[in-house]
Amino acid sequence: MDLALDAAQRAFRDEVRAFLDQSLSPELRRGAALTSGVFADPDIARQWQAILETQGWLVYHWPVAAGGPGWTPIQRWIFEKECAEAGAPILPGMGLKLVGPVLYSFGNDAQKAHYLPRLRSGEHIWAQGFSEPGSGSDLASLRTRAVREGDHYIVSGHKIWTTQAQFANRLFALVRTDPDVKPQQGISFLLIDMAAPGVTVKPILSASGDHELNEVFLDEVRVPVSDRIGEEGQGWSIAKFLLENERGGSCFAPQLLADLKRLRSAYGPLRGELADRGTRLQLEAEALEMTELRTLIEIEAGAAPGFRSLITKLIASEIRQGIEALSVDVFGLAGLQLPEQRPFYGADVPSPVGSAEAQAAAARYLNARAWSIFGGTSEIQLTIIAKAALGL
Ligand SMILES: Cc1cc2nc3c(=O)[nH]c(=O)nc-3n(C[C@H](O)[C@H](O)[C@H](O)COP(=O)(O)OP(=O)(O)OC[C@H]3O[C@@H](n4cnc5c(N)ncnc54)[C@H](O)[C@@H]3O)c2cc1C
Image (tube, rainbow, N blue to C red):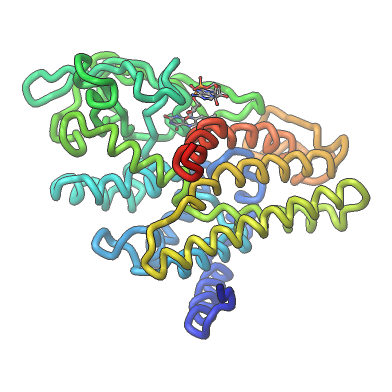
């Protein structure tokens, strides 16, 4: 495996680097570095999304036919690596990474023409309505009902853990359209206007005090049949396609390595036991990066992503939690502060004990616990690996 970039790849990297140098304002970099949740808040996410869209690089992972720039897998990796190193905001993935690929893969022409441009422009902000109380790992047991009435579905149910639903104006949801067949066969995939009568969003505050999560109540919400993606009953196969993108659609190592580097530069050289932990995490992240690159090189050579793509989210979750735990310990007592106010950047931030990075450390640590839960828990990932990769 040759890991050296060739001349064309180096030229591409330099182009990306120059663009990031020029486009990432100090405010955007600072906002990204001090974000305590998984995704950037709308204030910085909107700005960064618009800059990338103007440059033509927002949907860099979409195929050309859907509006992507036609980059190779290695070019996409270079872009993600450079964005991580430059400290770019992490855009919410619900629209760009999850429903976007569903729309261009399963949507009809009218749906693509209506939804894809609005997703890219930021007019539509998406949330993911899959999980319900009692239906998380066992997603196929979901109970939200959609009853056909003419050219509408009447949808009633209760979604939970809906990330950034408080900012969203569109929800993509799995609903039960047929209760009388096998659970997986009775599910359909609907696009729901969050402004429709009967939609209520209630906040869930995380242990960190962040408001990232919500409950979404659907009470006889009228959804046009034309906003169903695919056939009635096809929702489960669409959901499986989407979850594969959620678990393995991006490389995780670049961001992990960049965050370790930033921790070192915020604190200075680590010593003793902290240095050992830092080195171990560094090596694990580098090993993950090699694994991700091997997969990309295989994909670039025309092979299907092999079993290695199954393990990356699992490993990345452990490294992410290790980095945030190290961060709290590195900052000592200052790493334990947990002010109520958010965000940790901007004019109204309470003055920190120690540095701004120390002020965000405890919240980031608590929020990182969710890495081994969202997008499929680590236990579920292990079961998938046991079955699909090891044949157990
Ligand atoms: C921060 C965060 C953001 C999220 N965002 C969204 C979102 O935007 N939209 C959305 O739809 N959902 C979202 N989720 C929900 C997430 O997908 C679920 O939490 C996850 O699938 C687990 O489901 P659950 O919470 O119902 O836990 P359960 O499924 O009840 O699991 C509880 C425990 O039992 C274990 N377990 C369950 N079944 C098995 C099994 N068969 N074998 C072994 N162990 C098992 C699990 O691993 C876990 O440890 C989010 C969750 C978090 C934490």
